[in-house]
Image (cartoon, rainbow, N blue to C red):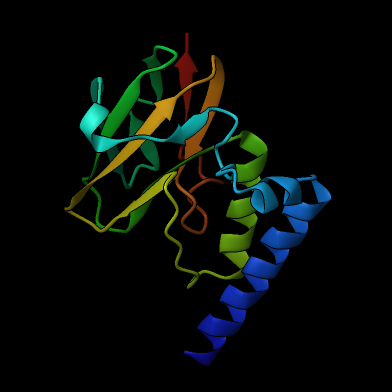
Length: 160
């Protein structure tokens, strides 16, 4: 338990330093809710879902579908199913955010996190993630369980 607390504290410190280094301290101070995945939008309101997408996660280290198309302004509910035998997750973010977070997960494999841009799903279970895509572009998602990102468990979201 002590090692989990130490790892969590270290991870939070690293994330805080990363935010400061990228100039994000002003957002936190001003009360804006910018954070991971802010480049593509914000957490969505479950009462305003305009599209539902089913996403399968498997032990083949793949998402199905691996490319998702949405319209700018849509609030999407992802119904994320884990058909594998190990824990998987779907995390929305820029490729750089995902790479940094994946590296942290390898260093601290017991790290638990709960952010609005991610959903962790136990084997044989399903979960939901609601996101409002307010900006056009091509964005990323991945599984950040240790080794899964490196094995190719990632995908793209195209917002038109």
